[in-house]
Amino acid sequence: MSRWDRRDRRAHKRIEPGTRTIASMPWKIAAAFGQMEQIVTTLQTTGDIDDQGGTAVFQVPSSHEWFELAPAINGFAEVYELHAHIAEREMPTAPLRQLANKFKYGMMIFQSDVDLVREALATLKAETRTMNLNYVDALIQTAAETP
Image (tube, rainbow, N blue to C red):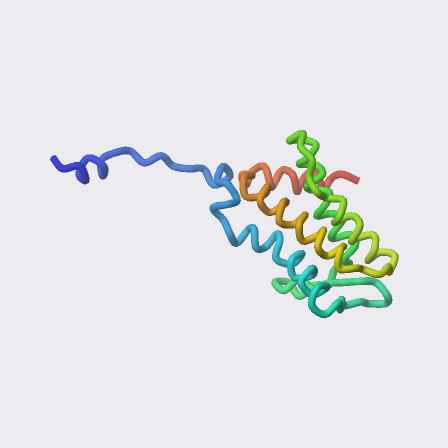
């Protein structure tokens, strides 16, 4: 019996969908970070952000809905602050909070702000790759329920 025949007879271990790491699902990473990275890239290249009635907004491509930038960025930061509390590690959410406050109060955004946010997003993305799907879903649910 050849080595290949034995390999086919081995039982395959089924992996539950919720236990897979996010690293094996690049579309989830793109969905979570794509919009934030696009906002940062727009700030860096043109400096233009859409606004409605003096409030900075962005449009989600999949649903074509408009959302306010400041609360969206703050919500993104809250998820990682919750993770930092659970994992007992520091997460770089301060640049995100600062950017959200600058959008909220209509302040100038400088290149140094954009660079800090880009670095923070890279760190958060690397951290996200190690999380499993159940954990991420629980983080998002908990952050959404927190007042």
